[in-house]
Image 1 (cartoon, rainbow, N blue to C red):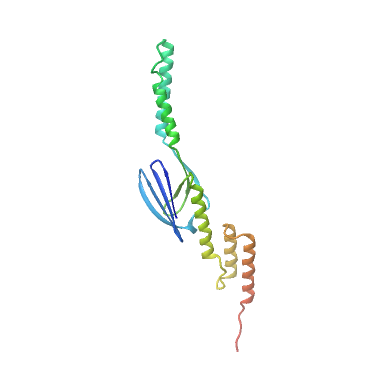
Image 2 (image 1 turned 180 degrees about the vertical axis):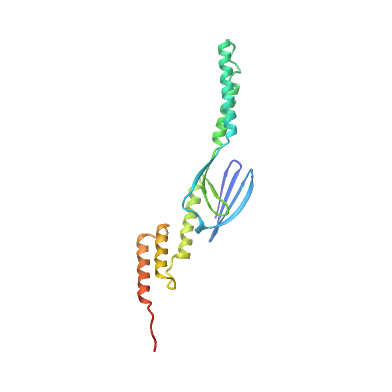
Amino acid sequence: MELIQKKGSNKHTFTFHDDYFNYAIKDKNGSCDENFRYVDFPKKSSVVIERNEWLRNVGALWIVIGLFQIGHAMYAGAPLSGKGFWMVIGLLCIGWSYLSTVRYSVFSMEPLKVYVIQERYHDVIIEEIKGRRIQQLLKYYGDVDPENDPENEIDKFHWLQKEGVINEQELEQKLAEIEFLKHDVQPQYFN
């Protein structure tokens, strides 16, 4: 499955495979492409807002110039025709700056951060990765390993429950299974 996000000159492509996802980004500064395992995807994210500050500042300056021209014309008793031109240009610049704002959810991963544009596919992408993360954690750690130390196994399943991979009932079942194996596996002596 592949989902593509576009906003302005930014293009983010998420390609989902069974054991990993590919994150490809292309923007005005260049491009990169990286594969990530689902189990490495963090639960927490931050938000980054990308704005065109220059366009906003120039727009504000032109609005001030336009207001000054209108004020000066009114004070001098001159006709107002054409005096609001810079104010209109300034409003258009500020409007364009606002419309070109891009919000991202940022997930810190190695070797680079994953930026998900907050648009119509945002929640679909996050839920897909989190769902596959849970499946991958269950695949790697979901079974009781009788060869492992029982205390380590107990800690592992408490961690899985804390990560939201298993619920309380499943945790109790796994702990009961560990307890059964702990008492069932005892050294037997042969003559």
